[in-house]
Amino acid sequence: MPLTTEKVPQTRFDYLAEVEEWITETSDHLERVPIDGVLESGAEFMDDEYLGDGDTMLRFNERGMRALCQIIGFRFDQLTKLESPGLATAVVNDLLHQQEVRGRVAEAEFVIDDRSMTVIGTVSKSYVSYDNAQFLADIQEFLDSIKQQEPSEFREAYVVNTELTIRFCSTTRHGEITGYGGTGVDKTTLGLEFHNSMVGTSSVRANYFLYRLACANGMMVPAGESVSRIHHSGNRNTFNKRLRHRFEELVRKLDRLTEMLETLGAMPFEPKRLVSNREVNQLLFDVLPATRRTICDGDRLQLNYLPDATTEDKTKLRIEHDAKIAARIPDYFGGEHSRRIFESGFRDKATVFDLINVFTEYAKDRPPSQRLEIEEKAGRLAKYINDNKRKL
Image 1 (spheres, rainbow, N blue to C red):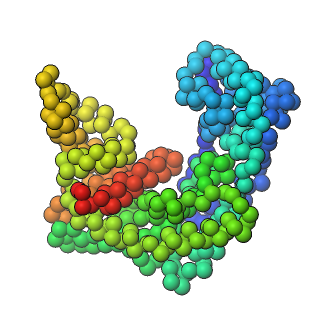
Image 2 (image 1 turned 60 degrees about the vertical axis):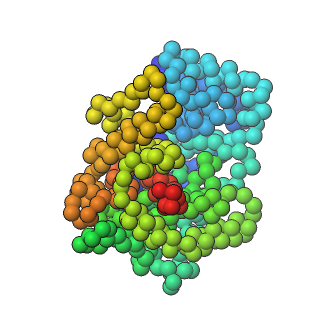
Image 3 (image 1 turned 90 degrees about the horizontal axis):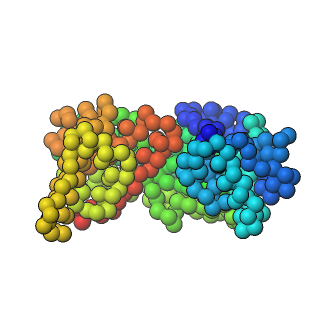
């Protein structure tokens, strides 16, 4: 049988009290166990599913197994392709007995949910844990300290494994888009997104969050590497100072979101112009990896070069081909609200902002992990277009 892993838990919360309750329920059940200690007790991987000595058996969810695969130097996707019963077990055990791997194992610990004895990730033994309870308390303390000049309210939160993404929106700041002679106001509230992982998969992250009122779409806009990431390191006082400094920088630059909305809302959606830019082309079709295949199959589009086509001819044909695909994105992936806004007379022309919101509305019906990934990629695309508007 193929490798067996447990499902990664993922949940959306619409109320802050739900987040607090989840934190209370889970925090006391996570423990860190040295991997070399588990192996020295005689534990081996068995039945393509468990690690144990026959008495104590550890399961793995997908994140936990991916983390173990990184340590032993064998790709998770390759391990899942091994269909012969016992083959995955043999591979993992062979690698776990190798001296080089044991050296890496000696520096790592399993993070285990003791309610189900499931490995949900790994961390280095020197990893400084920053639990979600303290994470939420620090965010609330910061937001309370600036509430006179920047009042905000909880919007939503997501949990994937132990990774908490929590979003707050300003109660006073918003961007407005009226388009080309539009007859109404399309408001988007501005906010902040905070992310923490308790299994060492990422640093603390702080970015911007946009919430479009017309259709309840969300989008994460990257704040920049120098501002967004705060690594789990140093003593508590040093970490808190760095945390607050990054949060303050984020708030200080909130006005840039308004400018970005105005730029995207004033830029007409012209597929050929967008896909002609190599970086935009890559970011556009990366938001939903199935975009090209879905539209090409549905419209029976093919890219064929003549035998004597020059490099210049091939470039022109590729751009024309990609422009046809991009033009059909709203038809294939648009939801009720984004299609209505895209096709209605609310604006004389569809804009790049409308295109971005095709993706963010599509994301709303996906599981939390996929939704967050799509919203993040849509935000990267939006930011790149805004930052390079003169080229486009």
